[in-house]
Image (cartoon, rainbow, N blue to C red; front, side, top):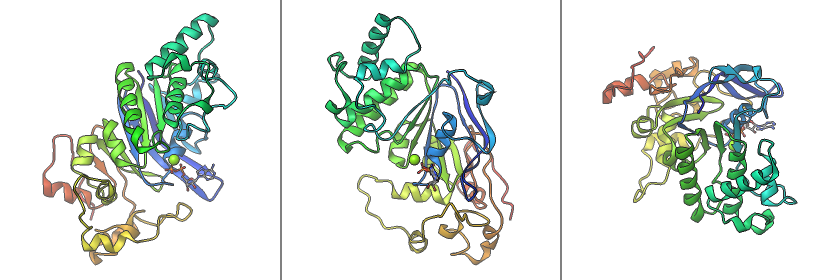
Length: 330
Ligand SMILES: Nc1ncnc2c1ncn2[C@@H]1O[C@H](COP(=O)(O)OP(=O)(O)O)[C@@H](O)[C@H]1O
Ligand SMILES: [Mg+2]
């Protein structure tokens, strides 16, 4: 088990685009952090930085307190499972070879035994061992991708939209598998999805990302049960709930149609203000949101929201023991 920590991580593509902007986030040892946010908010870029596929322009990423870039040449004990099981497996390699390739070196016979063990672990019959990915369904391929990630004996697993490309009918079984494996192997996990319902199902901690920033973070129960940031509320309202057909309140409907955020030109002040149902477009007394940039503090044990008006909302419903009130600066 290991703790993965992002400290002030910024990742840019070229000069014009800051995809991840000063992110602080901790994945505590043996826990699942669900990272949710709309497409383009920077979730995958953050994951790619952790596994070394993107270079941070600023900040650092630490494993058990040791910066990853201070482990030159060492195998990163982080593995990632990607969204598309069709492109993440080499079509010319058997399943056995794909999984064995990701293992640390060892005697051939041991490797074969380990492949069989891993296939069983992810719920695939050992007789698929010499099959090629083309013979498998999307769900089966994703199981192979998970087995391949586990073959690297990771301490931290990063799952990026791993059910998004699958049929709805098999998403649940893959999610159950991931949750069971995470508990049995006591993995630390960063679980990324644009779908709040999926994140809700697996996470101990939930972090909400918007335009390259974490805008709300805290224990899953608190963030989802008592969301503070208007963007989190918007995500929750959009997530399917049984029996719910209600329309958003008129104020929210007014801004919900606003243009999607453009990461090349993030708004000044609070980045969410052009879409905010409790912000300056609706309430004339909230002009400070146009210029003052709210930040959330990074302590994942506390429930925090990067909103000038979250503290007031917290006060209205009464703090839980996990919440420390941040004084409303205005
Ligand atoms: N390889 C890349 N080159 C240039 N821009 C990229 C690249 N990958 C992602 N981006 C841009 O970075 C922003 C964040 O993307 P991404 O991290 O994929 O977000 P998410 O995973 O939340 O959908 C988006 O504006 C996206 O267009
Ligand atoms: Mg993504």
